[in-house]
Amino acid sequence: MKKAIILLLGLTMGLGKMQAQTADCKVPMMLLVANSDKEVPASAQEMIESRMRQALTKNGIEGGAKFSNFTLVANVLSNGKEIIAGTRPVITVNAEMEVFVGNNFTGEKFSSFTLPISGAGNSEAKAYASAFQKVNGRNADLQNFLKETSQKINEYYETQLPSILALAQTYCTRNEYEEALCILSSVPPCCSKYDDVQNMLRTVWTNYVEYDCAVKVNKARTIWMANQTVEGANLAGVYLAAISPDADCMGDAKALEEQIRARIGDEWEFAKEMARSEVDLKKLEIEAIRAIGVAFGENQKAKTYNDHWIVR
Image 1 (cartoon, helix red, strand yellow):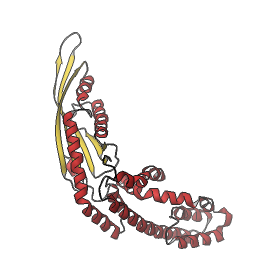
Image 2: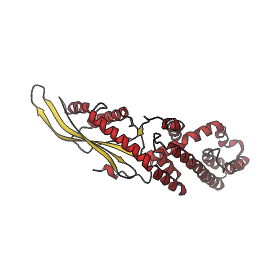
Image 3: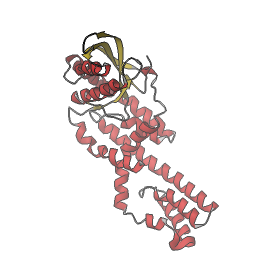
Image 4: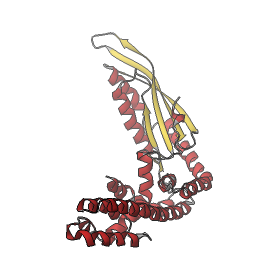
């Protein structure tokens, strides 16, 4: 699963420099539809998420980001409903959609916006569906809000990039490389100094590879010394197979491989694993540089992640 994430998301690294030179590159943003008002049906919540995602995309924002510095929160609050009696009763609803954007690392709210909505239908779900027709990428007020927000976010990265790079370096010095990659991966390629981000990504990655290699060799050696059987060899092989071929400590890994092979021989399944071509391993390494930071942020959240601002 992790390799699939790396192969899929890491492709963006190779395109980064090209994207940095385009004026319309999309700012990544997570989307959260709050469910604080029980009067609003669940079906309506799902509809607003779909419509907000479309609105973000139409206005130059990557609304499908799984992890980003920023989250857009949409919260629909009911202002009451009315039932108009008749042979086919009609339900009218009045509500407002609060939209606000905040920085997940600093807890700062960047901007907010309220959109009044109303609709009618012969069921409450249909009434809300009618009301949400106003929520789309063509809504002038919503368009202006998203454009202003996108501009503020771009300005944030332009002015705060030195601080972001310094924070990543701090994580690096503590051997917290996944956190560093997570911070750096949150910067969009639109940033005018994105070359600095890419350079640090490569530096962090190089350090990460060496640190990761040493950790995996030590784990493999510990397993092998405790259990010098086919089973122990295969468990040690899991760690050895995951080491980058360009790591400086690869010599230690190969020495341990030979030691295990000399005792176990052809029974060692790891020999089959090592039949993978180095080309494929190098490709995986390159693609993983940026993706591993994104995956870390998505699955664990960086230690600096602060979502308290989302609570009203």
